[in-house]
Image (tube, rainbow, N blue to C red; front, top):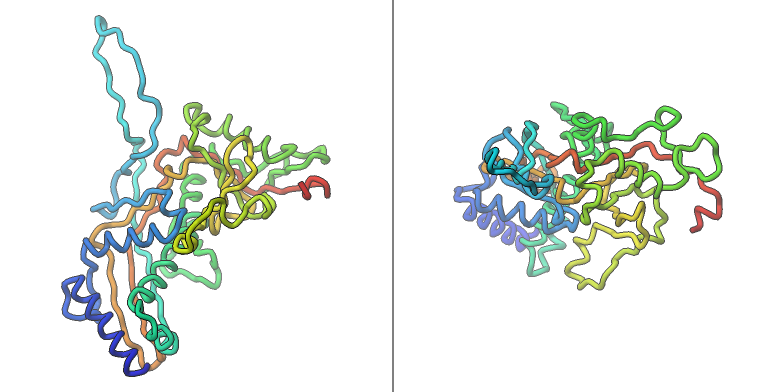
Length: 345
């Protein structure tokens, strides 16, 4: 590390220490609540998808879901000459809880890269943003692919972070299997074909109509905020232009929600990072939440001269929550058997 880079890095560490009210950052410290809130906001703002779902700070590691944002009908009538009017809870509370599990986000930046960044006036911001962007992407990856939490995870065996925490789709599989379509006439696949007699559906529209009508609660079936989150193998790339609206360059980095020009089952089709390639999820995006435990974020910044790099050890206690399982339908193992003409459409 060059002397000028070391001076900038020392100033970066001093700023982190001052913000968190600690003397030094090379010893494990608790991130202050104010800084934690700002970090979580930055993580959410770094991704358009995360900005469309809920981020909630919770005091306890486990407890009852917050349940805000999505709920069933509350309108009613009452003959008050016979009985009292009854209120309905505007939150969706059904006895399901949450548990925030520790997730480590341990990263390093080489001296060589720091030297390259030292020439820019936003040196400290570059370090922060590089860490935040990766944490945001990892949260999305866990949300759609996490199936369990191992005591020690293995990225080589589970490259989509399947063993870091349970994500949204896994909660649907475990807590509402009646809202999951994973088998058709043949076990292990849902066949989409206009030609084969053993097909389950003629097209994706028919599949989406079916799961909306049969797997989602009726009061959500007509919800104007419903979308179809679809895997990359199910709709041609030409229906997903990189940007659907004019955006300034500063917003391009966050544009990871791509809205299709084509609707599926009369619902907007969206693609987000790391969603399973052969799956469909029908829900409202604000039905998905990430809970983080307030006061539980830990951090250590180490200058590791033995490896010519700085190392950032950081952890957060997180939970991935479906607020209302009645507003979810999941289809998996979708197999497309299309004619050449259909594939070209």
